[in-house]
Image (cartoon, rainbow, N blue to C red; front, side):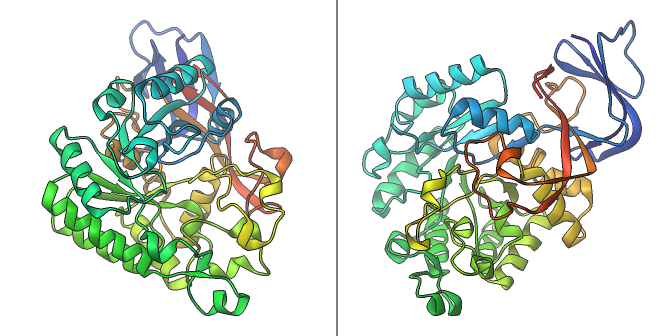
Length: 414
């Protein structure tokens, strides 16, 4: 279908394009032209984007799909056109058939693209390697342990050596098992006052230091997921400055919340890694603003019963796919980050980390697009969410920024 999107503010963070009252033309599911229609173009559908921003579809580096139909519907409602799925499903994505089945099912649903992470080790047990080559062929974009650590450092070294030999990227959650296994909240004055077992910053920094040294030894491309501390950011910045193939991301909630948001044991504010101090939040924000880190939703749909329990028994995580955009906009406004730079953190930056050609409005690129009204206000309520996970520390808050249309591969999916 030939589609013209007219009258919008077209922003392509990758190229630096930011042009108001511009038309974008789609032919054969690809971006064919900007500004002037291509020769012989006849629109079969016109979308009026007056007052809206037209940008590349969002690429989310971490979202769990407990119910694939509902969560992919939530993704496109949030302007997310590609979703990276961690391997800690049931069963774990440690066999090519499982990954192939997930990719095939997502294509049948015809919503957002699904980019699975294959399990680095069988059953995520941190012992024997999964069939990485077969998983890659089945559609896995990288390999990961999700939030399950490899306790045996020698096993991790061998895994990174093997991955490096095939140039397979590896996603690792930097958290020392022994320092975090019994923890619930950030190890500090607040957790001590509330009687909650703490997870020290050292749990993150020790893991990062170990991983960085293994990257030096192996040359493996490693992406560090969900940084939570100023000290962790400093270590990653030093590694990148050294020229090591290391990248990182930050969960959007960690850019806006701190340990104080736990309040009186608000289970919606329980995360893994935990929310940390104001200084940590400021360092994370500065890293994202400087382009050091991408931003992701860390979407974790949790059932209501798993949050209506004492804080220490609640499952960590929050719904994120449908609030990734408005929370990123909120962060950008709060920190004085220009809109194109903020959008880069959730479009072209994730694409670069994954080694994909998406996240851009370049001529010839797949027409994965998000059209949103940055001035539209709406209240986050459980009823407003398409995700089965209704858990969020932002319930009852007003959001700014509403997705009007989402296109995936030139198809209007929302």
